Length: 290
Length: 291
Image 1 (cartoon, rainbow over the protein chains, first blue to last red):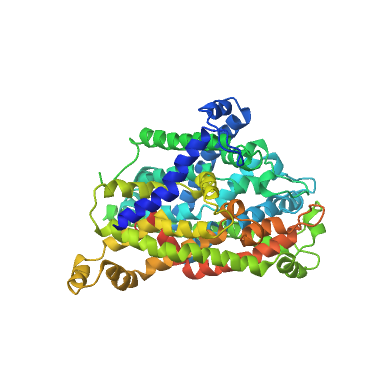
Image 2: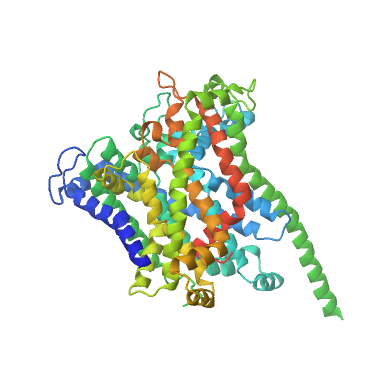
């Protein structure tokens, strides 16, 4: 009975909206008039839209770089924290802290940090040489964006840390006494034992990277003074992701049909990437309970 | 004898190496922690600067004269208290029903046998991984159809629908309870709901705290959903701050905004400091690692 209740809520909140959105993606709905059925025309239009294709390419690129950077940093930090030391809990707390910082705060923190005029980076560079200055937000928008996500990697670090603590200590100590270098231990013991967790993080990372929208818009658009409504701001093309395209089609252009079709393309790509990865890495991932 | 001595020295060298490593580790971790904490300090420093200091090129480390009036301006330029109360109200509307329904569904998944339960539970797990933002637009259109845009009922519905993560957490937690516990209660004539709310819920306080904190912070920090679904005086603090600190010619008052953000962060930091244990526990169980 209770499960039945959940099924009802699940249908009401997930299945029906998704089906309805699929139906709308087949129409020319503009939010005001009655939707008119036009079959797969929206999907075909999108395939010829270079902005949409470009946004997909950028999203995939961002997803890849973001996952690689976040996982490397969080894995190394988790490895460092896993050593016996005083104040480990405190260090873990501080490194985890940025993860709890809400989107809007982290965006503006990062904006002030990297900004040409008010940024700490330029302050440090200026102390070295007064002519040195970088305009990271304008010149390398995607790297700026990724650096923010690396700052907020707390969650994956904590997961890796727990995974590391489940690795039996004697295994590593035995290898140490046998003279294995830290790097060798890391590569031959740590990575294989953590591979299921890494896989989990990659899949979650794909989902999360595809759904990034607030950060690129607020972080890298409108370097000038004028501050317009949130969705009307145009991020540079490096950070113009599919979800931004979707929302701008829906709310700025009033073409919900196109937006829905783009959403479905995005979901398709997201799941295809995850499935391909799961298939391709089956051989390398070590599952203990199979 | 000789070989014994050799192994001794090699062991000593091993220990020495370990000690050197130790110092290096501490230095390294302190440097990294400093780097991670710097952005927060920079936020506080910048919030005390003047608008002019923020937009002139060679950046300065300290503000010439700390501008504490930025903070006063931050809470008076927009109706800070109202938006804060809005945010808290919205969080509670989502969180409180959410905990109850998630407990009911978790209990159902843990204890009842139904055809296709495994399949349904797999759907729950997949739903955990799908971020809400990616399906926000379909939901927007759906809610617009129901004329629910710009009301808090959406959050109530989301709460009743229960976050899949919380269903999962409750299910895992309830699975560890011995069956004898509820069998005894059933014999005494306790209803299923009675078992859940009189016996199971009081026993699972840590998980309730975890979910409460997690879900509260989730709504408190959310930007996209209130930005799309709410407008005017009903929005949350996050949206109000992003749009509110603008003067007539469209210039954003950056230091005032930063002051607003500092105040906005205080509850988060408090919850984080005191509830970190619960917070981390929740994340760990969601990824299937035992902490």
